[in-house]
Image (tube, rainbow, N blue to C red; front, side, top):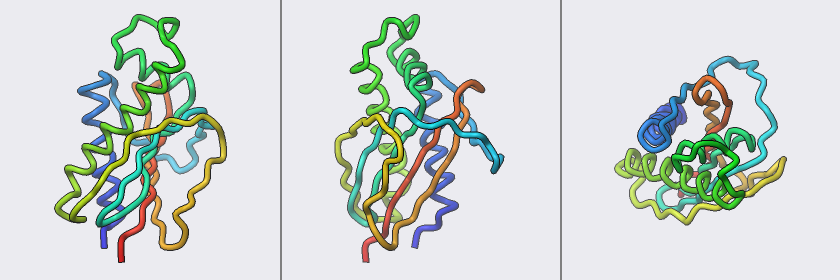
Length: 158
């Protein structure tokens, strides 16, 4: 059985690597339990199956998504962005974080197949994996300006 605390650390390490090398933004885990989290406007997700199956999601506000896209695409301001460009950036972030996570846990879980990323906008999205689902939520602060959340929802294969 995979321990949630180690997956929490692995997910955060993967995200820190991607944000520092590909987006040029610093992230830190938000550890306060009463942190006031904004309502998310955008969710970039990628599914996986193999030794474990589930979904990794990057949840953020529109403002945060635009800041990520601006840095990732080396633009001067959000005014240069298109909605499609913002969505592509958030999808690619979820893909890169999943790649880092996969490389770190592959020996523990065996095979792991990963889908292409997708991005949705909306609120109150729900998990449909059913019973025996584990959820890891890592709330992060990006450049001391934006709060975001990394979600890993999974179940181990029996």
